[in-house]
Image: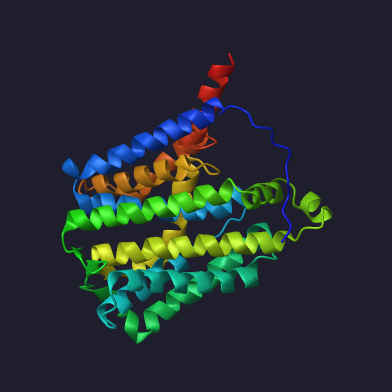
Length: 324
């Protein structure tokens, strides 16, 4: 497969890149000590959504594909992993792998059907396909319908570490999230990632170079689906539940919200967006206030004030200040 080679002489890190790396290190350190101050199950929820948002950002922020169907991969992976762990009694690693493989195959099928369409047409096709998965989840016996799959056993990590211990489960999910983020970082900083960015900016020019943009977009879409399924699988086993909530179109909208709030096209942005949205939902859940209305209002305010997302605007501000 050919790739676009861009002239890119070796230069010192930009100020924005330095800030991003410092923040990333700070986040990793904070997450390592976070269970000492915050309930680990809440942190696990944030981590799963961080990985989900980062996977979605791979297609929206770097490939320029707006998908309304990513809940199918997140929820589909969750159902398969939960079923494999509870009914088939597979170990933790194989159950998570089963959910990830299912999401990968589903992403490849969805992408093959939708990738040749652009803009709103692509978005609507992915939404329609995801709704088909949702209705299958409602009707198929193994999903448990509205009750979902409950009491999913967590099992043991590598047959040794008891994941019934919530702290052990937290660090396991943290490790999986870090691995997923490292994969995304490696992809976007490779020639393949540079080609994706070129396709997003000017697909016609990339085509004129003799490349096939659909092939690159399909690979990115499939990888994004795989990582989304991985995140859903971790969440299902950690919470010992796979439910219809994970596969509804609302979940697709929520991950779009996370990505836009944090700042698409950056690695830190989805981390910030997922943390803010999950945190708001958690702290508003016991307040008696309308959660959807408040999050929607918060989103409107952020869109008006931070057009590049919260981290995107911070990065731009620091770069401008550095330039002055």
